[in-house]
Length: 277
Image (cartoon, rainbow, N blue to C red):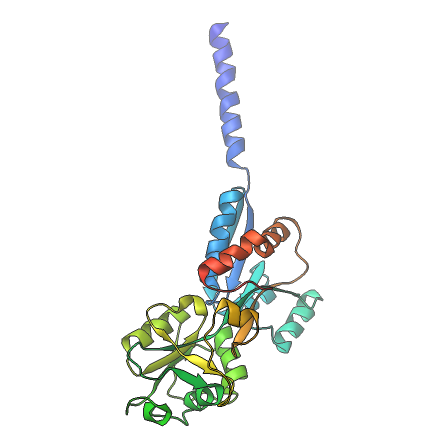
């Protein structure tokens, strides 16, 4: 009898172990904005520690890449540093009969990066536009050294590229602008180039100088800080967004609600961005 019992006990334990291996995690996929990658990774890391049954997978590639993935059905959430374009909304509607859901989740001040050795301290929006159009070519034209300005920017799939084009440059970029894959690469280029200038999310601005930005020649020069962005004083302030095909439900809704909560917004501040409200 003793041996008979042992024959039945071992298979029972094996069945329990096999069954437990098939317990499926809830999975949330997030793709898009490189500006938001650091922030999205921090959100995911902290959320998964508190909710071990949920897996949050983060991928960058640019806002356009994320929105395309949303339209194609290969991501649950598209992170974007710009609003969706009308053409993208129309594609979403054609495929899913929905206009999508936009959720502002943080604010960012697009920072103008200068090398620490650059004498220039401030720039107007008009000067920035002229620089990136190639109209201002030498730093001496705006109070700097007699040296050619070298411009760094983002690739055209980037929401930051689009926003800076639409809100600051307002014309075609000069062909001499060097497009780089990510804000970190822009910062690194300016850090190594005494005559370089770049732009990108505030959270990446480490090891370089921030230019003060003026709306026009008669306006005060302003740095992107929590106070100037909250008050709307910094001239290049934007929202960062999460997009979904439809209103979130289940674990995705729980995750987004947490991001918008006080705890989730504390992560925004810790990373170097600013709360959405």
